[in-house]
Length: 211
Image (cartoon, rainbow, N blue to C red; front, side, top):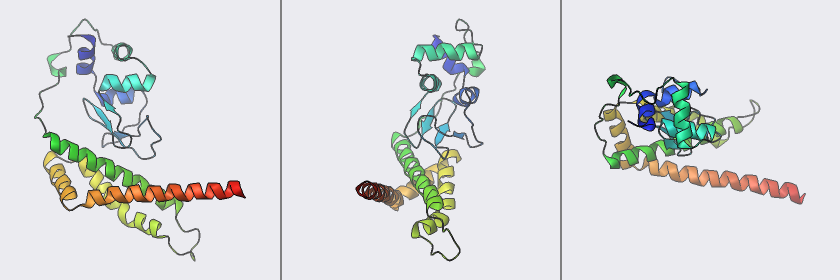
């Protein structure tokens, strides 16, 4: 067994994340260190990580390599040193990864697609709830603020299911999101509204410069 195999069999992704300062919540989520992440969007599984915000993914060696701007071999050596692993001594049988039941590729692709769209929409709602909150009791509610108040809990609930739910519940939820067109509608909404927000910002900037 080479250094990479020994390290991967001995150190889980969550253990490495905690060792190097990432705050991991009880759902196994953390704020992604590879983009400006205000809501925890990186899922830390035992053998790999995946960010639903920027798409960063990989194993424990990849995580450390990106965190410290190291080459893979240097990252593996750092893990071995920091976790007291002897590269010449194979890990115990209990530490070796157990075979996993293979998931259907189509389901995994659909699940990741749903997770990405839900995460994007969740970020948009969080931004709207702060940015468009009324400044006084007499001010009319902005439609975006109302939408954020109405939808945040539900979208968080769906995102939690796809993050920590059991396989059967996740599969049922993904099928429902795909079949009723909800996830496609949300993706289009996020794309359209983000483009609109950028347009407003650019227009305001141009007006400021022109003035």
